[in-house]
Image (cartoon, rainbow, N blue to C red; front, side, top):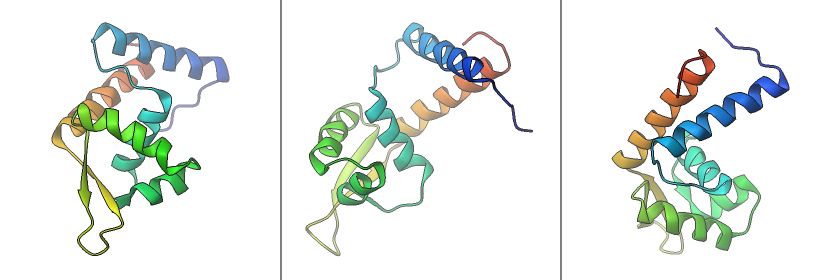
Length: 116
């Protein structure tokens, strides 16, 4: 069942999720970092720095900087592509999966009108 939201309802839902994230002391990700993380986890891989830059419409250094933060948090892992050493593969981690699972639960709770 799809939930239809008015524009302001959508913004309020996002606000509730963000407030819940702050209260939970979750890592403070930028919109760019979160977009990158969601792309890695929700789209079919394998993911490369070059491919992610193309998908998100930004330069490779932008992806690299975002990956630096996500790697420190252990939400993603970089690995050399054995088939083409020029490529760096971006891989999912258990810690990243748990973070996004928690975020998904917060979004679902906010959508149901519950406390995040």
